Image (cartoon, rainbow, N blue to C red; front, side, top):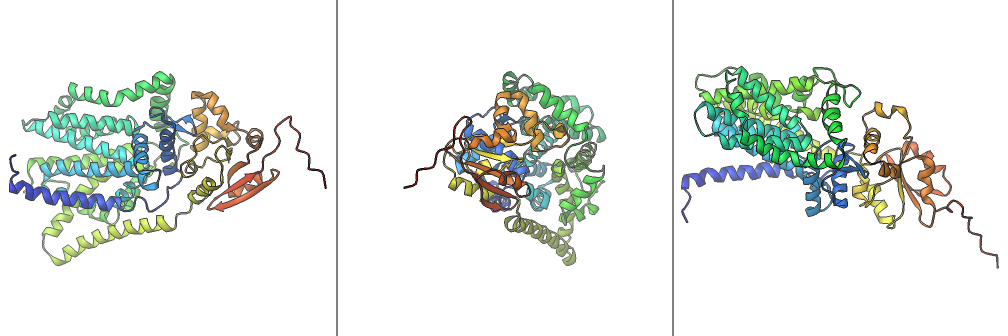
Length: 522
């Protein structure tokens, strides 16, 4: 067997150690804090249902088809929980995987185009950006789609620069199309549209517009279709209304509509992103816009890409009224690069004061990250973990359970519930469609599975009638709504935890049955 060159081994070893350090830093806290609500509870709950039902094609929420997002996050999370058990750390493995893949992939391409020191600095900044650090251990879809968007952009740009320089480009181009396909499976068309838009803007403003058509590769498109299309085709065959609901409603109508979560003014991301990346974001004031004399052509082009990427994404997501902060996550990759360049130049200057400034920024970023972990582990009080574990300990298999006027996303996972939970609410309220919440999600799913919807979307009379027979009825309700359950005969509160309470309702005679006669006195 041929021996590796000593020089190659000497370079590879620090890279391997650095990769392990990044992984350890991003992973150390993923199991230290409970799942947050509603975001983590919602998406992990869908993955839990996928695992318990064995249906890996149709995501469900409370037994009803959940077609808001494609399945990649659910697949990865369900597989993780199958291997490592249904716990918070396993539930957060997908975003951690996405963060690490993106950091290492961006580093590999940036190293070719801008040099090893800048690539290393960019990953160091990226991993310690508080926004990125938190997202890498937050179980929703934003990090996963941001990771594949970033990988699609950098590999497409790598292919474009190789085309310009007359070098082989096919491998990078195919990888870019594959990453775009995985981005589509992570969150939808944005996985293709956003990297395509960024690359097109960059090529146009940098005078490489002729390269655009050469990136539209038949092989790349074939790879994209083979990865992305099968799931959509399978679901459309099973649910004929899926394509319109997913592509038209969730992509175009929601993008332009109002009434969705987190409505913000147009300048929201211009403030939110710098705040969520302090103290590193202060270095952006020193970021280069124009080329320095010592820059090579590739490094100049790479910096142009970073600026085009940053501006395009901010503008794109500033257009709709709804601006969830996670939408801006793809900008963290160019932001880290643009910060790393002046920070590295300051460090390389050798001046003591300048180096202390760079070290202070790193220390401050680490302190913010650790402070966020400590707060989440000790102060977060919206989860239902304690209540769910009490239910798991006291409830006999088969005992009916209901949620009252709320869908408690994390309870099915922590209580290991094997069946959907009936939710008692006013399902005829015409205002359901006006609020973007759990009620709207379940109501919109009902037309896809009317029979299942009839079993889980119930009114008060039907819900409390589940106590009929020999088994008690367990009810979970928000503390502010406890009176609705307390008014039921023979209802007893078992535990109150954070913002919810668990009640036990003694069994009652079924309709048509008479109450059991008391035993005669001796």
